[in-house]
Amino acid sequence: MRSLALLFLLCGCLSAQPASFAGTVVDAIAQRPLAGAHITLTGVVPFGNPIPTYGATSGEDGHFSIPKLAPAVYSLSAQRNGFVYIQEDHQEPLERRIALRAGDAITDRTVEMAPSAVITGRVVDAYGDPVENAYVRATRVGGNSPISIVEDRMFSPTDERGEFRIVGAPGEFYVSATKQPGRVALREIRTDGSEIPVYGETWHPEAESRAKAVVVEAVAGRETTGIDIRLVRKKSLHISGVVTGTPDGSARAQVFLHTKSLGMPPATADADGRFTFSGLAPDEYQLTARYEAGALELMSRTVEVRLEVAEDHSVNLELAAGEGVSGNVEMEGTAQGLKVRLDALTQMQGVEMKGGEVDRTGNFNITPVYPGRFRVRVDTMPENAYIRTVRVDGEAVADTAIDFTRGVKGAKLKITVGVNGGSVEGLVSSEDGKPACCAMVVLAEKAEYVNDHMKAVKAGEKYRFTGLRPGKYRLIVSGPAQEFGTQTAETLFSKAPEIEVHEGDRITRDVTFKPRGSASEKH
Image (cartoon, rainbow, N blue to C red; front, side, top):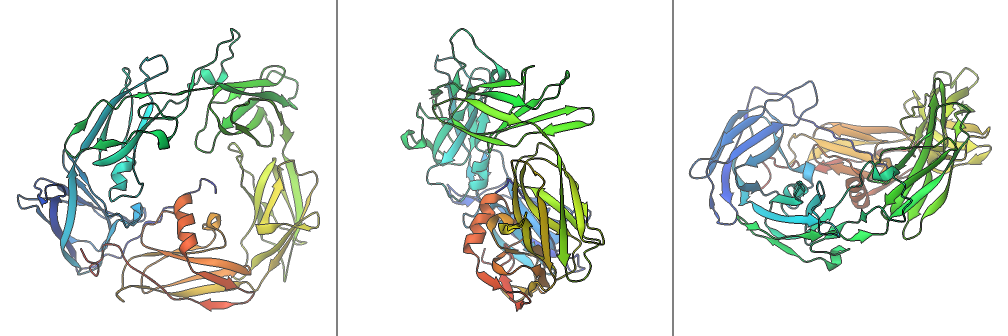
């Protein structure tokens, strides 16, 4: 799924009756009260409706108290030099919230902190020379843990001596180092027979995989030294090819190379359209060419290349002008006033396409459209309307997704809009039956489509989704401030109950959620 991510931050309304929050900070290792810890409650609210940030410091008995709080959803953090805040392992990172209603009085929250553990060492290359600005990361053995937020920050760059220092949680870890390719190396061509040094991710002390790595024990309150890593050298691979379709003139095409997680500086094709990327490690790469000269803009389709041990010198990126997509929208009544747009499902290198207005005869035109994959959308439809079918040159497509990776080539779209889509609605309540803030309700056909139907609702209110095309959906209900990144969305989707929607269905599904950190929870 495209690396897509949405954050919904919600709170209850302000009330004349304040809330309060108190508890004790403890040293999780020594099992005794911890003085001098700074406790912070930060309001998690929509922009433009600020809630103050509240703070307190624990006393000699570890006790802290924050009275007179505005009812809202808060993020809890704890800081003390030499300690890390231990989170609760059963919660997703953005579910670690304190939901306070008017009059709530939480008095016994336990905040655990552990003395920081330190891991130090040095990263060197195959020649034993120090590697500057390598990315060194500690990954907990076994994965899930009660301090995952701390572990997310357990990384360090190396300095000019190749040395790193990671400060974080105690426990057993794998430590790995990655050297990022330099800007010059990406375009460097060597004619002396030598290779550009390429290093893959290496695990302490000199392992190509985590399975062969030596486990590092980070001890609370101590420094674990000598965790040196000697980077494993890989074969230097190349991708080269030619950009075709470049007009005569001084301007040259830019070639963009990227992986799923890393973008790299573009290369400029030479006068013959040839380009080369050198010093590449094994990975899956995507390449796209783009040409701009004045008002003229050309783009190639995205070509995928998988590099393992072989090289690829045959990439052909054919530039093409944006084409026009025309079609017709058919629906009961008039389609005039609707707008058809194509949402890119592939990399478009910053190109934004405009939608096409539907005229009184139901016809529309969209231009320019460059090679790629797209999802058809229709804006400003009536409440219960939905896209029933999409046909390209008479052939139906699945999930309203169309493939123009080889160009539009005069294709005609036929979009049929139904006006009696299904609907799903229901009452949102909290587990204890009391008004609470807040829930995120999502209805999705696939995990990658969680953005289609989502609504933030307070307990005691209703959610409602209309204009649903017939099919099977998953109803996802999460706590406040849930961010739907790829992995989280897939996890929630797989666990959610299924609802089958038929045309014209009016389905009621009341939902219940448990506010994290509410007064009804055990602390």
